[in-house]
Image 1: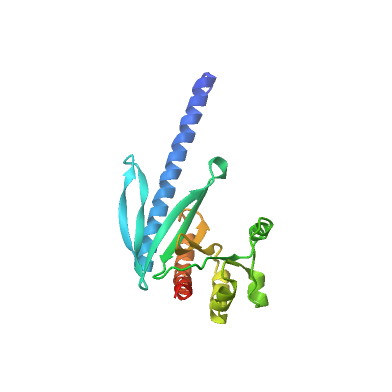
Image 2: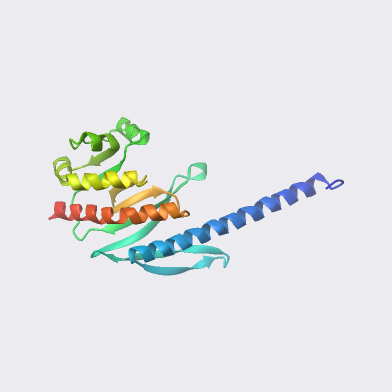
Length: 211
């Protein structure tokens, strides 16, 4: 590149970076779409294909359907903006009855400890191993403590050992499993599949509370 003016070199570098960015974005979108379709098949849900953006970038299919008698769907959303923008993926189940019960159930972490500084109250269920490994918030302490039966706690422990890193929570009347990401990896797809039965079980807990 001897003899080329610096502006020409800079433009060439900018174009190269832009092309690489577009190719990586297309690759990620394609992988995310493939995982979305595989997830739908594995959970027995319906797939609604979406047209590509600008005719180039793949749009991830929408996934929803009935599973174990309850409406189940895949959700994507983002929080923050700019450098702090975070993408999330969630598997949400709509309980057939929706009452007052709200909860947040996640593997214990530093972030959960920080929540305590902002007034969020953690409850203990009386199982030392479970209380050490899981963080629990709820608005109906006595009910939810009783609802976390030994077999339910053991299954949650197994899911944690199998790699689940997200949280179970109520949100806008639904029960969902949420973790950061955009379904761009096989590992994330497998975790959503692993979490599906627990989301459905926790939706039944919401139904009992509403009854």
